[in-house]
Length: 285
Image (cartoon, rainbow, N blue to C red; front, side):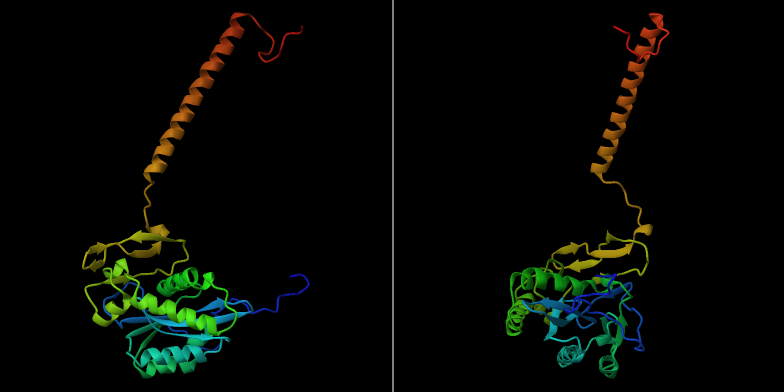
């Protein structure tokens, strides 16, 4: 099909296509400690599969409390539903930093002008860096695995009801260990002694995970994830790998000893018997 120039006519699953000419803002969350509600908000778009076609979902999340402030569904990828979700979230409060990807819906002047008019600093992920917005990506995983993928939506009204119930449970019912076993809505409303550090290195090297104790909770400390470059981490071998290496080295040494003993015995027998023929050649019957 590629040689013939043929492709399917169904909607593509690309939700973050940049628009030429739109302004791209720098990424502001590197090494930033998120210490209070409304410090950093983030937004993204994902697709919702149905029996026929797709719907597109956007949400605005407070990164400190993991609270979903607003969400909207649309059957097109125009920026209208993203602006509606942003306006609904801004009607409740105002963040200091707002982070998105470089999709055309978020880089449009109609979107960025609303943030600038409220005095919000705009941050955008690096190109191809999904981990720069990892908290919203983790939200999409929970929504799809626990709600969307278990349904078979026939029309647009079914996902509207299903996602409303899902987000209400996520805000008001689900407790988080990293939030001191409280719900996102309770943390967003009351704050609390929670300190999070979100760190992403825009390195072309393969990323790896390092634990770093920087989050203070009511019930002690938890060790959140910090994404840094693999090249800067001296990765020690695991105990299982050490035992496997010892076992392998022991087996190789034993095998070499057996081969040397066997070869010495064969050669000694051949010399003692005065055999001038090759030792592996059989005598004729």
